[in-house]
Image 1 (cartoon, rainbow, N blue to C red):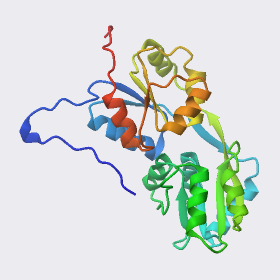
Image 2: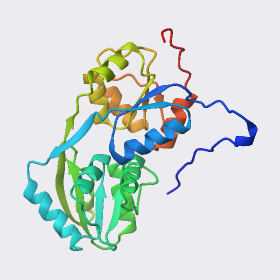
Image 3: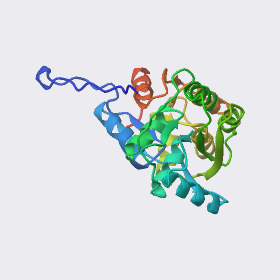
Image 4: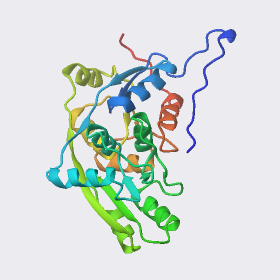
Length: 270
């Protein structure tokens, strides 16, 4: 998987204006992923504001998840699939062990980056269609004989991946790993969004978009809403959020580059 890198200006050339100089950017996820995004934003001169908008709550069937993670550690699966970065939070929280022979497939660069941020490896990210369906198609192409697959998903996720893999003859155990819950932001951050002090909001999933709509009912027109890819943009619009910028690729680098290219109106108030 190719990851983009920001190029640091040559110190011998003097001060180079940074494309996001002084802009306050809301980062909607915390943890290692949020810290990594914040570091990249600072490199470009931005002031990152980490405000986790979603978190995971325990699944209603804890025993099934515990059993699945124990079987995973014991080597019972050929593949582990994840379709959201929140699933990574669950794996990390449970100190899940992924054996060397178990291949890991994830949908989305956000999920891949989250896995790598906490020390897990990723073997497959869909190349053609970065979705559950795209991942199923690529796995089916790769595996001609039946494999044992553990799919971890959220309570609200449609079991597209599970259905397609089962139809192709694979032995799939689909387990609900978490429920997504909103995390209320502080009054200060809500006030900063309302007043326009936050210049841009990064939207990394449909669940984040729903929380942006719910928690920030009056976002100024000057605030840039940036979605991490066409699929997230579509989910955001469905949630009632107007999107200004859509990253061409579903990567953090592409998202931040898109924000950096977008002209932000100069604040009229200090």
